Length: 82
Image (cartoon, helix red, strand yellow):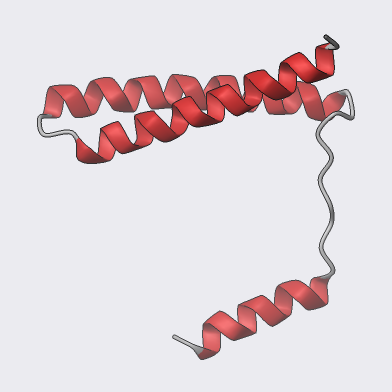
């Protein structure tokens, strides 16, 4: 298996972990549980960010630039609906 494939899988796993920790933080019933989930979430987000940056540096995580007109259209849509 290639390094790129391994990192893609790792990134998907850590994104899922972040999602679980986020919901655990939101749904926790005590301050102690909330704090534990929040700490785990922050650590997982740090790992996710490092993986993303490494993949981006290697050209393995491509992002697409959006035209300013499309951004303006979305902004206008939500400004009008407010």
